[in-house]
Each structure stands twice: as C-alpha cells, then as structure tokens.
Length: 80
Image (cartoon, rainbow, N blue to C red):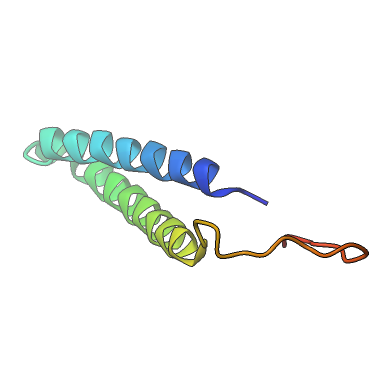
C-alpha cells in the first residue's frame, strides 16, 4: 500500500515526465520526419495523464488530520 506522501511524490514525478514529453512533442511536431514519433509520444502522454488522474483521485480519498480514532485495546486496525 502506498501512503499519501509516496503518492504525492509519484504524482510530482509523473507531472515532471509529462512536462518533458510535452516539450519534446513541441520540438519535433513541426518536423515531417518525426510524425510517427510525435504520435507515440502523444500516446505516452495520454497514458501518463490517466495515471495522474488516478493518483489525484486516490489522494482525494485520503483523510488527513485527527479525524480518526485510535483502535481500542483488542481491536486490530488494517489498511488495505
């Protein structure tokens, strides 16, 4: 299971990769010889965007703060 901070790090890393891909696409998109490469890069960016959306949804579901009560004696707390 990934905790919130790890998820945030993954989100930032993925956003960084997408930024680099956007720059690469912009640079080669005007070159006719790279038409196929632009298509592949665009597909990769789309995949990264899906990952970002999933991570953002997961982060939105994480409760932050002292809203949770500690488990009572004899009870087990599991995180799935």
